[in-house]
Image (spheres, rainbow, N blue to C red):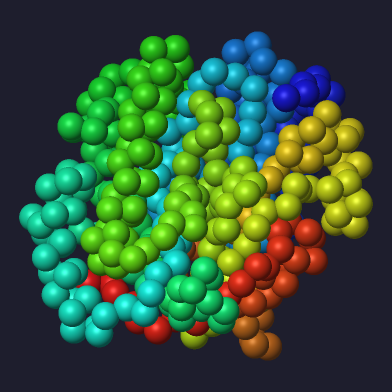
Length: 399
């Protein structure tokens, strides 16, 4: 990753420089604006830590077309959004990103059995059944937005008429235990002992260095393997004829200094799902090399990346959205961000003509929706990937 010296001084200028290192490709709605407003703080914190370590600050964020809020309160409070990739120079790991190995399995299969028989299989696998015994992780398809979905394909694939889409991870993987030190700092005595809290002007940043970073990476690699196996096992147990198309992590870490939040990275050669809403098709995508120069120029971000020495990072983003991302209905724009120590208060203008304002520090309990086909159109418009098929939801299990 290229490095560049900072020529600005002062906290406001450092925050502005961090904002300059955030590149967005999305649909331009309020949820993306909120992501922009928040993620600059995380990038500023990482750069501050880099500078303290004697590393030229080069942390950056590349947003995917689904860039949006995160409803995870600690992650949002730390300055992170969702739907993008964070990279930087330095052998230290970020704990506040809260990578949890969540991902999706996509497989082609014959016509599924009736819903009643599938529910019987689900009951067999849940609780202390086969899933628990073989992976050590419990059933979570009914928690958050984790689900098992049966899809009818628009066109058969090698004679198979249907597909299964499984979205989930493993809740126990976040805790210290048989799988290793765990993924979340507050759930691991080992990580808590090895971590240090770096104080920055925009709030604390929990990091792991040296032995701690290596311990975390070993534990993460094992947890990711368990999460992948868990989704595959479930698909094969429910649908014996299934043939895997892809099994990808969208909330993970490709290296100690490379994190992706809600997007798929480096999936060349695979057919991956873009799941929007239950009332819309699931699109099958193949990644194209991205971002290409003419696309970045059209977005107005090529020159900014070049100036900062970050063009190689932008040109190798290679990301795709895994879903549409959250919307935040009822509001029409971000008026500003107020800083109260390490706490950020987001001022939003309410929909309508009243001019009323709403103030939020987090978005866990704010009504939300999901974006629609504007996201897949954006993927095609920016040549991030090509649509190679689609399927219509028939059954969904969140039990």
